[in-house]
Image: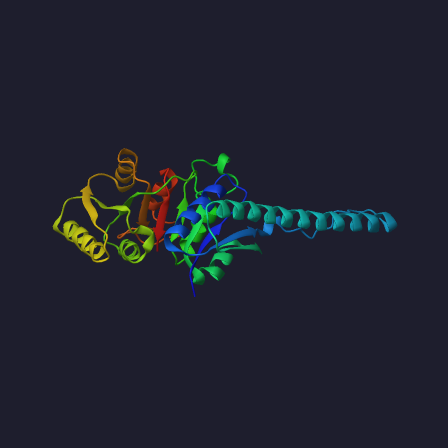
Length: 284
């Protein structure tokens, strides 16, 4: 069964970018795209009695009217969801994607991802959701929840799409970083791209060996990667490198090598996703 690019779209300013990045991934991997929009529980009509102490026929009439309003609201919410999916499909159509499916779901987005990720090669999501303009310094809560629970690579789309040619891999020798190298080696997505594997810290024998091993694994897959060690605090050093050397994408583990896994994703990861103006691919 062909694995899909799962693209999560909402009404945010990131949705077009999510679709354009999904189309780029699809073109390079020949994978179909599934567009999913989730109507959260907050968008479902609430069952509540707003009639107060109104009596007899007036109370009954009001309850009927409220029920009708609830039904109309549910219908409008569903129409809006379908419109979002239709707009997303149009972007993929124009980008040349031929295999597209759409799915409108009710419930929790994390539960939805858990149900569909077995068929996914990657999950594409925007950095922030519909409140993006009001929370520019924060990650979307749904993104953090998905990263904590998903097992497939998470592609965090930047605000606007631009062609991707130069990729930085943040490598610390940890399990998720090694998974990232293995994923790059196996995926057609990275063939032909300029790959740079970067470690932050002291230039030790261990750091050199880790980079040499990563480079050898990529070379065996036909990818000639450059490697280097840079000094500084990981998020600051990597952020400066992305900006200063015009990287188009960052690949990194969701959790650091020495970090005890907690209820939030690793602090370096969080800061990189928050501050980077390019897409970030997270590996668990």
